[in-house]
Length: 295
Image (cartoon, rainbow, N blue to C red; front, side, top):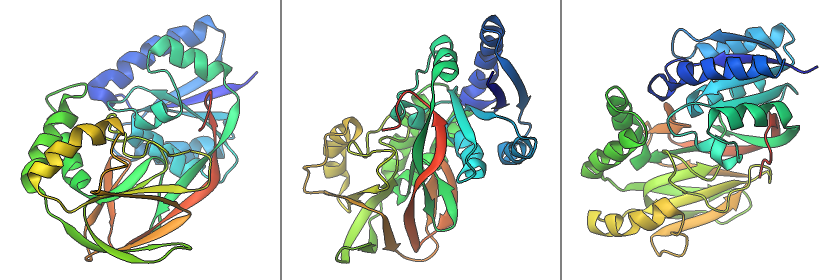
């Protein structure tokens, strides 16, 4: 029988992590699952707990929380051959949605117990692993403001207010883009996104053509435009209907270097880290993940 070891972020999703995992425990017992679990006590601890679980030869290590928790566990398990699962009990759960994982607790547990491991890509921004979306520009402000609003709001409201406040600080960034195997070009960017998954920030479909197992990153660049043009484009951008806009550059590549002004902070799966200039690189098949389809 497969054993599952859960690394639970109890404060993910404004406390949803603990609440829903307590429901999951009852469901696991009903199904006679073999499992153990541990709660994180501080930011970043999921990495250390994943390392300890790996050293203890746990059969399947499951990240319970949002995209940040999933990132921490995946950064340890990548290229180890270990099997990873996800119970998506965070706020946005963007990667889980790209993996077609249900967000409702009973269905999420059932899917975890029935799914077979499949191969999924990861990626690097500089030397830091990410599994969903990384980039710089407008989204960094969104992350900063969203974290502030998460302290007093739940659900999608923190993202909405984070976006609205970030609109006050739109600033185009000059960047030289160097795709592997392609011609370098210079542009301006309000937002530069290197995407393994399809969506970020709680459902914005930045890369509707992304495939989690094709060995490529989808690069989406929103050019430097004014606030009125940005607001006009934003509804299409959120829905993933922006690819034909003259304000968008979109292409696929194994790796791409973004030569932007030094020191700009990056958004890495909803956490801040690394700085520009930066090379984004796909890591094909780096993860074995329990999901109905990694596509």
